[in-house]
Length: 252
Image (cartoon, rainbow, N blue to C red):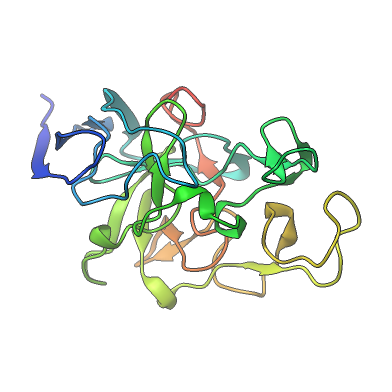
């Protein structure tokens, strides 16, 4: 007989474009854990649309399930879309759709040079991110690109979400160091100029730089988990386990 754990949270959120409540349900049995939500956060957010983000937030019907006993493989898979979900039902989507494009007024576009992909924290206006590192996609989905302050509790309870392969996502602030660093010198092509963090390719993974692997994964109390960090990549861009079909695409 399966046992289910149900957590339902209702919180008022202050939004300029929609008046609604955060709704999230977490159901767990001995096979999988499923998070169902309306994709509205349980905290205040920025005003959308704004100067850096032209999209309006829309309530969604989202259900994301992950295995409760994930298995780490020896090969990482890089993800373009949703890579994880927070315990408040908001998705982590660290990548952007922009690439270097000198013909665009902003300097980047969806059809730009894919060899130079824009990192949101390197963009001049950060594409309209609010104080919780969230903004809205073209389909109205509010999502995170970094840590949201309301998710932080204490180091004794650092769990903030689950990755698409089922491993936990934690935040320990400066206690955990990313393994990435800025390259030195000048870019050999594309936008040229010094590596300054505008593009993902401005960074390189250096195993001796920090304690985490290239997916921002590492050990916590004897088990493998992913971390959100205060430095690039902030939210990891790849996963080590078998990815749930609910993740890793642009469907949400």
